[in-house]
Length: 516
Image (cartoon, rainbow, N blue to C red; front, side, top):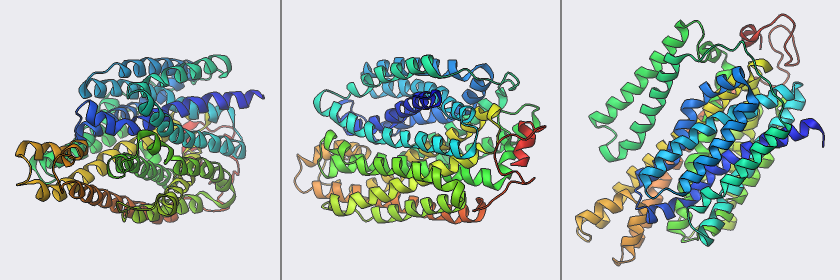
Protein backbone atom coordinates (compact mmCIF):
# COMPACT_ATOMS: atom_id res chain seq x y z
CA UNK A 1 0.00 0.00 0.00
CA UNK A 2 1.41 3.45 -0.92
CA UNK A 3 2.81 5.48 1.97
CA UNK A 4 0.20 8.22 1.59
CA UNK A 5 -2.60 5.66 1.74
CA UNK A 6 -1.20 4.23 4.98
CA UNK A 7 -1.03 7.72 6.49
CA UNK A 8 -4.61 8.41 5.42
CA UNK A 9 -5.80 5.09 6.84
CA UNK A 10 -4.10 5.83 10.16
CA UNK A 11 -5.66 9.26 10.64
CA UNK A 12 -9.06 8.02 9.43
CA UNK A 13 -9.03 5.27 12.06
CA UNK A 14 -8.31 7.91 14.70
CA UNK A 15 -11.18 10.01 13.34
CA UNK A 16 -13.49 6.99 13.31
CA UNK A 17 -12.59 6.23 16.95
CA UNK A 18 -13.58 9.71 18.12
CA UNK A 19 -16.85 9.68 16.19
CA UNK A 20 -17.68 6.19 17.44
CA UNK A 21 -17.33 7.54 20.97
CA UNK A 22 -19.75 10.37 20.28
CA UNK A 23 -22.31 8.02 18.73
CA UNK A 24 -21.87 4.92 20.88
CA UNK A 25 -22.87 6.76 24.06
CA UNK A 26 -26.15 7.95 22.55
CA UNK A 27 -27.32 4.39 22.03
CA UNK A 28 -26.75 3.69 25.74
CA UNK A 29 -28.67 6.77 26.98
CA UNK A 30 -31.98 4.98 27.68
CA UNK A 31 -30.10 2.28 29.61
CA UNK A 32 -28.14 4.91 31.54
CA UNK A 33 -31.41 6.69 32.38
CA UNK A 34 -32.62 3.52 34.11
CA UNK A 35 -29.46 1.98 35.57
CA UNK A 36 -27.84 5.22 36.78
CA UNK A 37 -31.19 6.91 37.53
CA UNK A 38 -30.14 9.72 35.16
CA UNK A 39 -32.50 12.60 34.41
CA UNK A 40 -32.80 14.23 30.98
CA UNK A 41 -30.40 16.93 32.22
CA UNK A 42 -27.91 14.25 33.31
CA UNK A 43 -28.13 12.64 29.88
CA UNK A 44 -27.52 16.01 28.22
CA UNK A 45 -24.37 16.46 30.29
CA UNK A 46 -23.15 12.90 29.62
CA UNK A 47 -23.23 13.74 25.92
CA UNK A 48 -22.25 17.40 26.17
CA UNK A 49 -19.50 16.98 28.77
CA UNK A 50 -17.50 15.30 26.01
CA UNK A 51 -18.60 17.77 23.34
CA UNK A 52 -18.00 20.83 25.53
CA UNK A 53 -14.44 19.87 26.51
CA UNK A 54 -13.75 19.02 22.88
CA UNK A 55 -15.09 22.34 21.55
CA UNK A 56 -13.44 24.44 24.27
CA UNK A 57 -9.96 22.92 23.94
CA UNK A 58 -9.62 22.05 20.27
CA UNK A 59 -8.23 25.44 19.14
CA UNK A 60 -5.50 25.39 21.77
CA UNK A 61 -4.72 21.73 21.06
CA UNK A 62 -4.44 22.46 17.33
CA UNK A 63 -1.92 25.20 18.04
CA UNK A 64 0.05 22.94 20.40
CA UNK A 65 0.21 20.14 17.83
CA UNK A 66 1.43 22.59 15.17
CA UNK A 67 4.18 23.83 17.45
CA UNK A 68 5.41 20.67 19.19
CA UNK A 69 4.56 18.00 16.64
CA UNK A 70 1.41 16.47 15.19
CA UNK A 71 2.57 12.86 15.42
CA UNK A 72 3.28 12.85 19.19
CA UNK A 73 0.06 14.82 19.79
CA UNK A 74 -1.92 12.18 17.91
CA UNK A 75 -0.27 9.31 19.79
CA UNK A 76 -0.61 10.89 23.25
CA UNK A 77 -4.22 11.78 22.51
CA UNK A 78 -5.12 8.25 21.46
CA UNK A 79 -3.45 6.62 24.47
CA UNK A 80 -5.17 9.08 26.83
CA UNK A 81 -8.45 8.47 25.04
CA UNK A 82 -8.09 4.73 25.64
CA UNK A 83 -7.37 5.28 29.34
CA UNK A 84 -10.34 7.62 29.85
CA UNK A 85 -12.68 5.13 28.17
CA UNK A 86 -11.45 2.47 30.56
CA UNK A 87 -12.21 4.80 33.47
CA UNK A 88 -15.70 5.53 32.10
CA UNK A 89 -16.44 1.81 32.02
CA UNK A 90 -15.81 1.72 35.78
CA UNK A 91 -18.08 4.70 36.62
CA UNK A 92 -20.86 3.95 39.11
CA UNK A 93 -22.91 7.16 38.97
CA UNK A 94 -24.05 9.71 36.43
CA UNK A 95 -21.91 12.37 38.14
CA UNK A 96 -18.67 10.40 37.85
CA UNK A 97 -19.46 9.46 34.25
CA UNK A 98 -20.05 13.11 33.35
CA UNK A 99 -16.69 14.07 34.88
CA UNK A 100 -14.84 11.35 32.95
CA UNK A 101 -16.57 12.39 29.73
CA UNK A 102 -15.01 15.85 30.16
CA UNK A 103 -11.56 14.21 30.36
CA UNK A 104 -12.36 12.06 27.34
CA UNK A 105 -13.33 15.17 25.37
CA UNK A 106 -10.01 16.82 26.23
CA UNK A 107 -8.07 13.93 24.71
CA UNK A 108 -10.36 13.93 21.66
CA UNK A 109 -9.55 17.64 21.24
CA UNK A 110 -5.87 16.71 21.07
CA UNK A 111 -6.50 14.01 18.46
CA UNK A 112 -8.92 15.58 16.01
CA UNK A 113 -7.03 18.67 14.75
CA UNK A 114 -3.93 16.57 14.09
CA UNK A 115 -5.86 14.33 11.68
CA UNK A 116 -6.82 17.18 9.37
CA UNK A 117 -3.45 18.92 9.62
CA UNK A 118 -1.63 15.68 8.76
CA UNK A 119 -3.89 15.31 5.70
CA UNK A 120 -3.22 18.92 4.66
CA UNK A 121 0.54 18.40 4.92
CA UNK A 122 0.46 15.04 3.13
CA UNK A 123 -1.94 15.92 0.28
CA UNK A 124 -0.94 19.37 -1.00
CA UNK A 125 -2.64 19.41 -4.44
CA UNK A 126 -6.27 20.53 -4.26
CA UNK A 127 -7.99 17.63 -6.04
CA UNK A 128 -5.86 15.07 -4.21
CA UNK A 129 -6.58 16.76 -0.90
CA UNK A 130 -10.30 17.06 -1.65
CA UNK A 131 -10.40 13.31 -2.29
CA UNK A 132 -8.51 12.63 0.95
CA UNK A 133 -10.92 14.88 2.84
CA UNK A 134 -13.79 12.93 1.27
CA UNK A 135 -12.33 9.69 2.64
CA UNK A 136 -11.82 11.41 6.01
CA UNK A 137 -15.46 12.54 5.93
CA UNK A 138 -16.52 9.01 5.05
CA UNK A 139 -14.71 7.83 8.19
CA UNK A 140 -17.05 10.11 10.12
CA UNK A 141 -19.98 8.35 8.46
CA UNK A 142 -18.55 4.95 9.30
CA UNK A 143 -18.18 6.08 12.91
CA UNK A 144 -21.82 7.17 12.91
CA UNK A 145 -22.71 3.66 11.71
CA UNK A 146 -20.44 1.57 13.89
CA UNK A 147 -21.18 3.58 17.03
CA UNK A 148 -24.92 2.84 17.24
CA UNK A 149 -24.71 -0.69 15.79
CA UNK A 150 -21.74 -1.72 17.89
CA UNK A 151 -23.15 0.03 20.93
CA UNK A 152 -26.54 -1.59 20.44
CA UNK A 153 -24.96 -5.04 20.22
CA UNK A 154 -22.86 -4.46 23.32
CA UNK A 155 -25.69 -3.03 25.44
CA UNK A 156 -28.04 -5.83 24.37
CA UNK A 157 -25.62 -8.69 25.02
CA UNK A 158 -23.43 -7.29 27.81
CA UNK A 159 -23.96 -3.97 29.65
CA UNK A 160 -23.55 -0.24 29.15
CA UNK A 161 -20.01 -0.50 30.56
CA UNK A 162 -18.97 -2.46 27.48
CA UNK A 163 -19.54 0.48 25.13
CA UNK A 164 -16.55 2.16 26.77
CA UNK A 165 -14.40 -0.95 27.11
CA UNK A 166 -14.79 -1.57 23.37
CA UNK A 167 -13.11 1.72 22.48
CA UNK A 168 -9.95 0.93 24.43
CA UNK A 169 -8.40 -1.56 21.93
CA UNK A 170 -9.59 0.50 18.95
CA UNK A 171 -7.84 3.60 20.33
CA UNK A 172 -4.65 1.67 21.05
CA UNK A 173 -4.68 0.16 17.54
CA UNK A 174 -4.97 3.66 16.05
CA UNK A 175 -2.04 4.78 18.23
CA UNK A 176 0.07 1.84 17.00
CA UNK A 177 -0.66 2.76 13.37
CA UNK A 178 0.31 6.37 14.07
CA UNK A 179 3.63 5.19 15.53
CA UNK A 180 4.29 3.02 12.47
CA UNK A 181 3.18 5.21 9.58
CA UNK A 182 2.46 8.85 10.41
CA UNK A 183 5.42 11.16 9.69
CA UNK A 184 6.43 13.98 11.99
CA UNK A 185 5.50 17.53 11.02
CA UNK A 186 5.51 20.74 13.00
CA UNK A 187 5.87 24.48 12.71
CA UNK A 188 8.18 25.78 15.47
CA UNK A 189 7.28 29.36 14.56
CA UNK A 190 3.72 28.90 15.82
CA UNK A 191 3.27 31.36 18.71
CA UNK A 192 2.68 30.38 22.31
CA UNK A 193 -0.90 29.79 23.43
CA UNK A 194 -2.78 33.01 24.01
CA UNK A 195 -3.71 32.31 27.64
CA UNK A 196 -6.24 35.13 28.13
CA UNK A 197 -8.01 34.19 24.90
CA UNK A 198 -7.99 30.52 25.84
CA UNK A 199 -9.52 31.14 29.29
CA UNK A 200 -12.16 33.52 27.93
CA UNK A 201 -13.15 31.15 25.09
CA UNK A 202 -13.56 28.23 27.51
CA UNK A 203 -15.66 30.40 29.82
CA UNK A 204 -17.82 31.65 26.93
CA UNK A 205 -18.58 28.19 25.51
CA UNK A 206 -19.07 26.72 28.99
CA UNK A 207 -21.43 29.43 30.22
CA UNK A 208 -23.53 29.27 27.05
CA UNK A 209 -23.85 25.48 27.19
CA UNK A 210 -24.67 25.48 30.93
CA UNK A 211 -27.32 28.15 30.42
CA UNK A 212 -29.04 26.27 27.60
CA UNK A 213 -29.05 22.94 29.44
CA UNK A 214 -30.35 24.50 32.68
CA UNK A 215 -33.05 26.60 30.95
CA UNK A 216 -35.88 24.01 31.01
CA UNK A 217 -35.53 23.59 34.78
CA UNK A 218 -35.39 27.29 35.65
CA UNK A 219 -37.47 28.71 32.78
CA UNK A 220 -36.16 30.30 29.59
CA UNK A 221 -37.21 33.78 30.77
CA UNK A 222 -35.97 33.44 34.38
CA UNK A 223 -33.46 35.93 35.72
CA UNK A 224 -30.77 33.26 36.14
CA UNK A 225 -31.04 32.06 32.54
CA UNK A 226 -31.19 35.56 31.05
CA UNK A 227 -28.14 36.45 33.11
CA UNK A 228 -26.38 33.36 31.80
CA UNK A 229 -27.05 34.35 28.21
CA UNK A 230 -25.87 37.88 28.98
CA UNK A 231 -22.64 36.61 30.52
CA UNK A 232 -21.99 34.33 27.52
CA UNK A 233 -22.57 37.20 25.07
CA UNK A 234 -20.29 39.51 27.06
CA UNK A 235 -17.55 36.86 27.11
CA UNK A 236 -17.79 36.38 23.34
CA UNK A 237 -17.43 40.14 22.84
CA UNK A 238 -14.49 40.23 25.26
CA UNK A 239 -12.84 37.34 23.41
CA UNK A 240 -13.01 39.24 20.12
CA UNK A 241 -11.54 42.37 21.73
CA UNK A 242 -8.71 40.43 23.37
CA UNK A 243 -7.86 38.52 20.21
CA UNK A 244 -7.74 41.77 18.21
CA UNK A 245 -5.46 43.38 20.80
CA UNK A 246 -2.84 40.70 21.53
CA UNK A 247 0.22 40.32 19.31
CA UNK A 248 -0.13 36.55 18.96
CA UNK A 249 -3.85 35.60 19.20
CA UNK A 250 -5.14 32.06 19.62
CA UNK A 251 -7.08 32.63 16.43
CA UNK A 252 -6.94 35.53 14.02
CA UNK A 253 -10.56 36.66 14.27
CA UNK A 254 -10.10 38.78 11.14
CA UNK A 255 -10.24 35.48 9.22
CA UNK A 256 -13.98 35.61 9.80
CA UNK A 257 -14.13 38.82 7.77
CA UNK A 258 -13.55 36.57 4.76
CA UNK A 259 -17.14 35.57 4.03
CA UNK A 260 -16.06 32.31 2.40
CA UNK A 261 -14.29 31.27 5.59
CA UNK A 262 -17.01 32.42 7.99
CA UNK A 263 -19.82 30.99 5.86
CA UNK A 264 -18.04 27.63 5.63
CA UNK A 265 -17.57 27.59 9.42
CA UNK A 266 -21.24 28.48 9.87
CA UNK A 267 -22.32 25.68 7.52
CA UNK A 268 -20.29 23.08 9.42
CA UNK A 269 -21.68 24.35 12.73
CA UNK A 270 -25.27 24.08 11.49
CA UNK A 271 -24.73 20.62 10.01
CA UNK A 272 -23.37 19.13 13.23
CA UNK A 273 -25.88 21.05 15.34
CA UNK A 274 -28.53 19.22 13.33
CA UNK A 275 -26.83 15.80 13.40
CA UNK A 276 -26.14 15.65 17.14
CA UNK A 277 -29.56 17.02 18.05
CA UNK A 278 -31.23 14.45 15.80
CA UNK A 279 -29.30 11.50 17.23
CA UNK A 280 -30.01 12.55 20.82
CA UNK A 281 -33.76 12.54 20.14
CA UNK A 282 -34.18 9.70 17.66
CA UNK A 283 -32.32 7.23 19.89
CA UNK A 284 -34.86 7.78 22.64
CA UNK A 285 -37.75 7.73 20.14
CA UNK A 286 -36.74 4.28 18.94
CA UNK A 287 -36.26 2.85 22.44
CA UNK A 288 -38.92 4.60 24.50
CA UNK A 289 -41.70 5.20 21.96
CA UNK A 290 -41.17 2.28 19.56
CA UNK A 291 -39.79 -0.11 22.22
CA UNK A 292 -36.86 -1.24 20.08
CA UNK A 293 -33.90 -2.91 21.75
CA UNK A 294 -30.54 -1.14 21.79
CA UNK A 295 -29.30 -3.38 18.96
CA UNK A 296 -32.43 -2.84 16.85
CA UNK A 297 -32.01 0.90 17.39
CA UNK A 298 -28.37 0.79 16.33
CA UNK A 299 -29.16 -1.09 13.15
CA UNK A 300 -31.76 1.51 12.24
CA UNK A 301 -29.03 4.18 12.11
CA UNK A 302 -27.37 2.52 9.11
CA UNK A 303 -29.23 4.59 6.45
CA UNK A 304 -28.05 7.91 7.86
CA UNK A 305 -24.52 6.61 8.43
CA UNK A 306 -24.20 5.12 4.95
CA UNK A 307 -25.53 8.22 3.24
CA UNK A 308 -23.08 10.43 5.21
CA UNK A 309 -20.19 8.27 3.98
CA UNK A 310 -21.35 8.33 0.35
CA UNK A 311 -22.15 12.04 0.28
CA UNK A 312 -18.79 12.88 1.91
CA UNK A 313 -16.96 11.21 -0.97
CA UNK A 314 -19.24 12.79 -3.56
CA UNK A 315 -19.02 16.23 -1.94
CA UNK A 316 -15.23 16.08 -1.99
CA UNK A 317 -15.33 15.41 -5.73
CA UNK A 318 -18.02 17.93 -6.56
CA UNK A 319 -16.70 20.99 -4.69
CA UNK A 320 -13.73 21.63 -7.04
CA UNK A 321 -15.94 20.95 -10.09
CA UNK A 322 -19.15 22.89 -9.46
CA UNK A 323 -18.15 25.15 -6.59
CA UNK A 324 -18.53 25.05 -2.83
CA UNK A 325 -21.66 27.22 -2.99
CA UNK A 326 -23.78 24.70 -4.88
CA UNK A 327 -22.66 21.70 -2.83
CA UNK A 328 -23.08 23.27 0.63
CA UNK A 329 -26.36 25.05 -0.15
CA UNK A 330 -27.83 21.82 -1.54
CA UNK A 331 -26.70 19.92 1.54
CA UNK A 332 -28.24 22.42 3.95
CA UNK A 333 -31.48 22.50 1.95
CA UNK A 334 -31.65 18.68 2.17
CA UNK A 335 -31.03 18.88 5.91
CA UNK A 336 -33.73 21.47 6.46
CA UNK A 337 -36.26 19.55 4.40
CA UNK A 338 -35.46 16.34 6.27
CA UNK A 339 -35.99 17.95 9.69
CA UNK A 340 -39.27 19.58 8.72
CA UNK A 341 -40.43 16.16 7.50
CA UNK A 342 -39.19 14.42 10.67
CA UNK A 343 -41.19 16.87 12.80
CA UNK A 344 -44.34 15.03 11.68
CA UNK A 345 -43.32 11.62 13.11
CA UNK A 346 -46.10 9.57 14.69
CA UNK A 347 -45.99 6.62 17.07
CA UNK A 348 -46.83 4.09 14.34
CA UNK A 349 -44.78 5.68 11.52
CA UNK A 350 -43.42 3.22 8.96
CA UNK A 351 -39.67 2.82 9.34
CA UNK A 352 -39.07 1.49 5.81
CA UNK A 353 -41.15 3.97 3.83
CA UNK A 354 -40.83 7.12 5.96
CA UNK A 355 -37.97 7.02 8.45
CA UNK A 356 -35.42 5.52 6.04
CA UNK A 357 -35.95 8.22 3.36
CA UNK A 358 -35.77 10.88 6.10
CA UNK A 359 -32.48 9.46 7.35
CA UNK A 360 -31.05 9.25 3.83
CA UNK A 361 -31.94 12.89 3.17
CA UNK A 362 -30.36 13.91 6.46
CA UNK A 363 -27.18 11.88 5.85
CA UNK A 364 -26.76 13.20 2.31
CA UNK A 365 -27.09 16.74 3.61
CA UNK A 366 -24.50 16.21 6.36
CA UNK A 367 -22.01 14.58 3.99
CA UNK A 368 -22.29 17.24 1.29
CA UNK A 369 -21.91 20.09 3.76
CA UNK A 370 -19.11 18.71 5.93
CA UNK A 371 -16.60 17.79 3.21
CA UNK A 372 -17.14 20.80 0.93
CA UNK A 373 -17.20 23.32 3.76
CA UNK A 374 -14.15 21.73 5.41
CA UNK A 375 -12.24 21.98 2.14
CA UNK A 376 -13.16 25.67 1.94
CA UNK A 377 -11.94 26.30 5.50
CA UNK A 378 -8.64 24.53 4.87
CA UNK A 379 -7.85 26.72 1.85
CA UNK A 380 -7.46 29.80 4.02
CA UNK A 381 -4.24 28.71 5.74
CA UNK A 382 -1.07 27.12 4.29
CA UNK A 383 -0.09 23.54 5.16
CA UNK A 384 2.43 24.77 7.76
CA UNK A 385 -0.46 26.25 9.78
CA UNK A 386 -2.89 23.44 9.00
CA UNK A 387 -3.37 22.72 12.70
CA UNK A 388 -5.01 26.10 13.19
CA UNK A 389 -7.29 25.64 10.17
CA UNK A 390 -8.21 22.10 11.16
CA UNK A 391 -8.76 23.19 14.76
CA UNK A 392 -11.15 25.92 13.62
CA UNK A 393 -13.00 23.33 11.54
CA UNK A 394 -13.06 20.90 14.46
CA UNK A 395 -14.16 23.63 16.86
CA UNK A 396 -17.09 24.53 14.61
CA UNK A 397 -18.08 20.86 14.42
CA UNK A 398 -17.92 20.33 18.14
CA UNK A 399 -19.49 23.69 18.97
CA UNK A 400 -22.32 22.77 16.61
CA UNK A 401 -22.65 19.33 18.19
CA UNK A 402 -22.50 20.73 21.72
CA UNK A 403 -25.14 23.36 21.03
CA UNK A 404 -27.21 20.89 19.01
CA UNK A 405 -27.54 18.52 21.96
CA UNK A 406 -28.01 21.40 24.41
CA UNK A 407 -30.52 23.42 22.38
CA UNK A 408 -32.51 20.59 20.82
CA UNK A 409 -32.45 18.63 24.07
CA UNK A 410 -33.60 21.66 26.06
CA UNK A 411 -36.33 22.60 23.58
CA UNK A 412 -37.48 18.99 23.69
CA UNK A 413 -37.41 18.93 27.50
CA UNK A 414 -39.48 22.13 27.74
CA UNK A 415 -42.15 21.01 25.26
CA UNK A 416 -42.19 17.46 26.67
CA UNK A 417 -42.74 18.70 30.25
CA UNK A 418 -45.45 21.16 29.19
CA UNK A 419 -47.28 18.42 27.29
CA UNK A 420 -47.02 15.72 29.95
CA UNK A 421 -47.75 17.69 33.12
CA UNK A 422 -51.56 18.00 32.60
CA UNK A 423 -51.87 14.25 32.01
CA UNK A 424 -50.02 13.36 35.22
CA UNK A 425 -51.27 15.89 37.74
CA UNK A 426 -54.06 14.46 39.87
CA UNK A 427 -53.33 10.90 38.73
CA UNK A 428 -49.74 10.46 39.95
CA UNK A 429 -48.08 11.46 43.22
CA UNK A 430 -46.41 14.90 42.98
CA UNK A 431 -42.93 13.47 43.58
CA UNK A 432 -43.37 11.04 40.70
CA UNK A 433 -44.73 13.82 38.48
CA UNK A 434 -41.56 15.88 38.81
CA UNK A 435 -39.31 12.88 38.18
CA UNK A 436 -41.36 11.87 35.15
CA UNK A 437 -41.10 15.40 33.74
CA UNK A 438 -37.32 15.29 34.18
CA UNK A 439 -36.76 11.82 32.72
CA UNK A 440 -38.46 10.05 29.82
CA UNK A 441 -37.14 6.77 31.22
CA UNK A 442 -38.84 7.39 34.56
CA UNK A 443 -42.08 8.44 32.83
CA UNK A 444 -41.93 5.23 30.80
CA UNK A 445 -41.65 3.24 34.05
CA UNK A 446 -44.58 5.15 35.59
CA UNK A 447 -46.66 4.41 32.49
CA UNK A 448 -46.31 0.67 33.10
CA UNK A 449 -47.97 1.07 36.52
CA UNK A 450 -50.64 3.71 35.82
CA UNK A 451 -53.24 2.84 33.14
CA UNK A 452 -53.78 5.41 30.40
CA UNK A 453 -50.48 7.24 30.95
CA UNK A 454 -48.45 5.56 28.20
CA UNK A 455 -50.22 7.37 25.34
CA UNK A 456 -49.75 10.71 27.12
CA UNK A 457 -46.01 10.06 27.52
CA UNK A 458 -45.70 9.19 23.82
CA UNK A 459 -47.68 12.27 22.78
CA UNK A 460 -45.57 14.55 24.98
CA UNK A 461 -42.39 13.01 23.60
CA UNK A 462 -43.53 13.61 20.01
CA UNK A 463 -44.49 17.20 20.87
CA UNK A 464 -40.96 17.80 22.12
CA UNK A 465 -39.39 16.08 19.12
CA UNK A 466 -41.53 18.09 16.68
CA UNK A 467 -40.63 21.39 18.35
CA UNK A 468 -36.91 20.68 18.22
CA UNK A 469 -37.03 19.47 14.61
CA UNK A 470 -38.95 22.51 13.34
CA UNK A 471 -36.40 24.86 14.91
CA UNK A 472 -33.49 22.91 13.37
CA UNK A 473 -35.23 22.72 9.98
CA UNK A 474 -35.72 26.49 9.81
CA UNK A 475 -32.10 27.05 10.86
CA UNK A 476 -30.84 24.77 8.07
CA UNK A 477 -32.95 26.50 5.41
CA UNK A 478 -31.65 29.89 6.57
CA UNK A 479 -28.11 28.47 6.38
CA UNK A 480 -28.69 27.33 2.80
CA UNK A 481 -29.72 30.86 1.81
CA UNK A 482 -26.63 32.29 3.51
CA UNK A 483 -24.40 29.74 1.74
CA UNK A 484 -25.78 30.80 -1.65
CA UNK A 485 -24.91 34.40 -0.83
CA UNK A 486 -21.47 33.92 0.70
CA UNK A 487 -19.66 30.82 -0.56
CA UNK A 488 -17.59 30.72 -3.79
CA UNK A 489 -19.20 29.34 -6.91
CA UNK A 490 -17.97 27.44 -9.93
CA UNK A 491 -14.85 28.82 -11.56
CA UNK A 492 -13.85 30.87 -8.53
CA UNK A 493 -10.23 32.08 -8.70
CA UNK A 494 -8.69 33.58 -5.55
CA UNK A 495 -7.52 37.20 -5.67
CA UNK A 496 -4.16 37.31 -7.42
CA UNK A 497 -5.15 34.82 -10.11
CA UNK A 498 -3.84 31.62 -8.51
CA UNK A 499 -5.82 28.53 -9.38
CA UNK A 500 -4.25 26.08 -6.95
CA UNK A 501 -3.97 26.23 -3.22
CA UNK A 502 -0.22 25.76 -3.07
CA UNK A 503 1.54 28.57 -1.26
CA UNK A 504 3.00 31.06 -3.77
CA UNK A 505 6.60 32.10 -3.20
CA UNK A 506 6.96 34.93 -0.74
CA UNK A 507 3.64 34.44 1.03
CA UNK A 508 3.47 33.54 4.70
CA UNK A 509 0.46 32.25 6.60
CA UNK A 510 -0.91 35.69 7.51
CA UNK A 511 -0.69 37.06 3.95
CA UNK A 512 -2.14 33.84 2.54
CA UNK A 513 -5.26 34.41 4.63
CA UNK A 514 -5.81 37.56 2.60
CA UNK A 515 -4.65 36.01 -0.70
CA UNK A 516 -7.00 33.03 -0.54
